[in-house]
Length: 95
Image 1 (tube, helix red, strand yellow):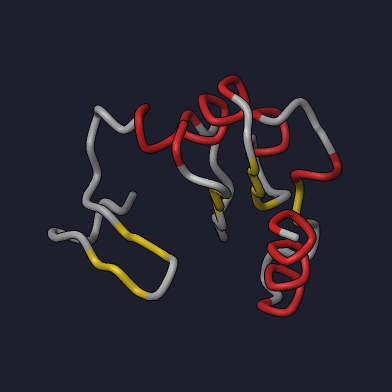
Image 2: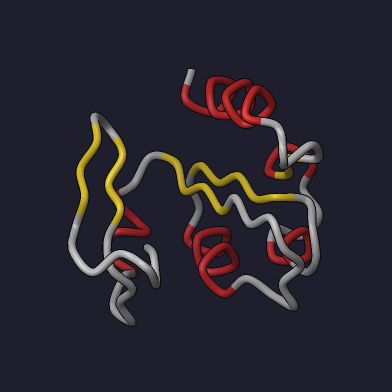
């Protein structure tokens, strides 16, 4: 979900949707939710909600995001500015 995108964008197996307050059904259905924040956030509501319903989840290890996944190393991307690191971690989760 993006606050920037005004329409739904589909690219291969990735979908970017406009921000919505009613995204819980999509949270439950998706195989992997990625929260690739590059700036410090106080807390990540979307990542916490996904963590609570279960399923694949990766978040940047910055700001309050690690707290949203109870500091589970398997869900944290330490080198979050590296495209290679994200690709490696995504492959680990989906394989």
